Length: 201
Ligand SMILES: [Zn+2]
Image (tube, rainbow, N blue to C red; front, side, top):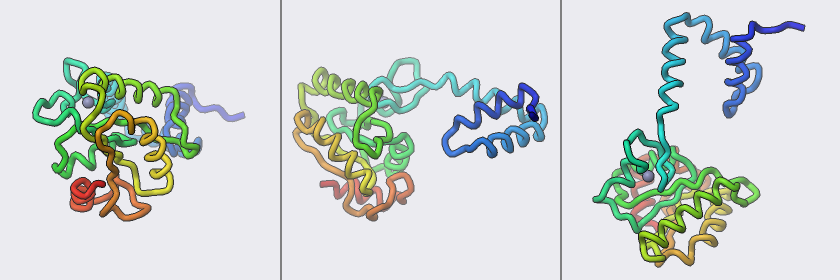
């Protein structure tokens, strides 16, 4: 049976663990990296090593490189701590943040499965949020905003999270109006997202 040289096999194995990369594509990418030469391979390796320095915010779970445990958004005293927008992915946060319309905080719950159940790590995140609300916000947040996609899966997620969090918020709202049905927050333009923030209900 044909065998790849071990260093190439090793990178192919790692690449094939990435989402939406199949085994054949991983092999192709492996050869591509080799073909680009030593300099590029070194850059790639350096970039990956630096990625190891990235930290995850202990409050909202977004990334940061700060000395403390909080990301720039959570550390920003000018933003309201008691209005929290819950999103599935980091990329959703980035799209919403780019609108410049939102001055509260965020919370990343992670992609929720089609079955509408939370993974153990998501339950831990939620527990973290609940204890923050208990400890820092006197038991109830002013407003919790559900920033899930206006899709059937997003509806499942919203229902699930709503059930968990409703007792801990004075007001619960959902982004939606203005967002095209079936569309995704990540890919919506700034204007659409801005009005979805303004017109949350
Ligand atoms: Zn944060």
